[in-house]
Image 1 (cartoon, rainbow, N blue to C red):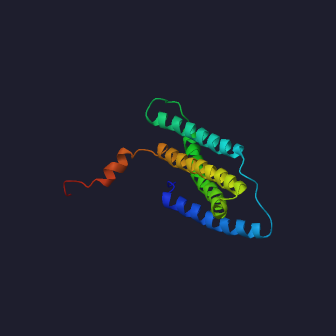
Image 2 (image 1 turned 45 degrees about the vertical axis):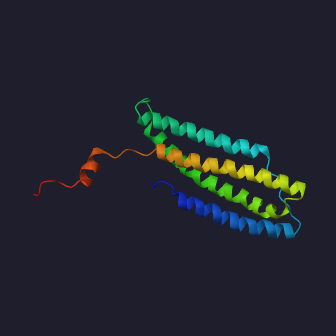
Image 3 (image 1 turned 180 degrees about the vertical axis):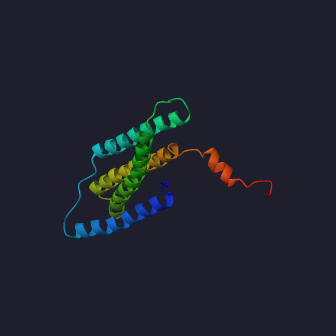
Length: 159
């Protein structure tokens, strides 16, 4: 399985933010307003990031030889979880960024300013989740095997 590219995450974030801003503006034109982002969302996102980082750290310790008793299936599952975290972080960051974009023109209104600030904090938390996902993917990367290195290096003597 290939690692997640930063370019793809940036594309997801931008696309979700653009579509989300259009949808939010349309909803507000009909009088539908989203509630402010709750602090529980920050805690949940950062808690998820911490749990994924911890799982990735155990895989890293295994690769360094500090923890020799790790199940290889657990390492593979940690990689998949990290990939999902990176994508989820990008999606959530785009969703919250759409709220910031919608409210940025109305910052003189106190309730809009608070809403934009809460969404901005959620964007930062979501980016942290995406970055943790990318870091844990790197933790789960296997070093090249001796066979792969031998195949890549050309034979110095012609046959």
